[in-house]
Length: 210
Image (cartoon, rainbow, N blue to C red; front, top):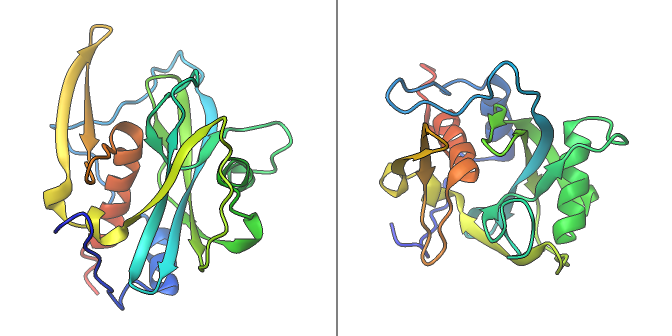
């Protein structure tokens, strides 16, 4: 599938997605490709991201941000909008909506929460809760130029094609790590964001036996 390709799948309605996400069925650990997990003695920093699914006329898309190069954490990387939990946040959903609004200008009133993905540990010390939201266009985005270099959309269908999933491993600080990348054109979506996308792929493509 080409990066510009998008296929309308009538099965992927808001209600169908919400039902799939409510079960978390299909997410499985692969013995030869383990996810990073914080050691027991480490207290992770709690964070949340919004996984915005946009109901575009030509097919569902996902919103991503590219972080500016000067940021302390994950500079220049492609990610979902989000950040660490603040004391004033009622829950992880509140964190995800607040951060997404601050970073991209996407009003929380435009987002309908339809579920969550499994928590994701990141070697930089964070434990991230991915919150999935349904967004109806048109989009009126006003990115924060300090944190966000770019905001863009990618067809959901791109990530549901296993041919677009790449596996990698390397050694960092004496420990071998495994991670996915899902390059889209000239953009390299990798690491935690690609790992969350792989969880979404597993959930949406799992055989439920129905």
